[in-house]
Amino acid sequence: MLKWLIVFILAAVAALLWRRATASTRRLPQPGEPAPAFDLPDQDGRNRALEEFRGKWLVLYFYPRDDTSGCTEQAAQFRDALIEFDRLNAMVVGVSVDDLRKHAAFRSKYRLPFSLLADVKGVTAARYGSLLDLLVVRFAKRNTFLIDPQGRIAKTYVKVNPSRNAHDVIADLKALVTA
Image 1 (cartoon, rainbow, N blue to C red):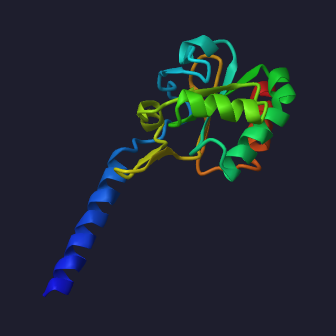
Image 2: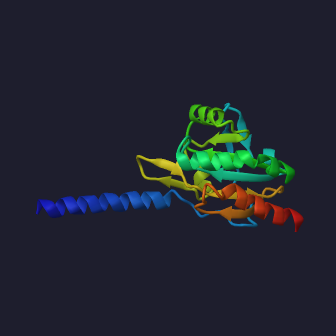
Image 3: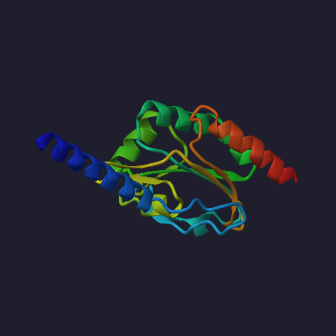
């Protein structure tokens, strides 16, 4: 009897965690839709808002954690391709639920020349359908959004490969700019 009670409790907890995780994730914004607004502090404590990037392409990439292998590789790929993004009139901005202090250390350690936004409550990640919240653990999913100069979603990249993400975005951006 006790064995069945334990199994039932574990199943109930698992169902609750799954429900919370899926409830905290909204629908991904789709191409053609306005990009969800954001106003978040960067690694230096300066607030950065979507409106600030009007007139340029914006690569808004969500990543799980600072200074982890996949996140470091993804950030380094964007850093190393920044000259190409500049040529295409595009800005790169990373977002995770880590705090300002972690962002500042991560940015400095890897000499990242772009802003890292601190979405510690996960509100912006949720608006972009990119938050996984499991009660005790919350992190951003590895999704990227290409936002056009008018503030609309041009392309959505889901569950991206950290080593290919920057190159994939550049290829699509070149196609969109020359179209």
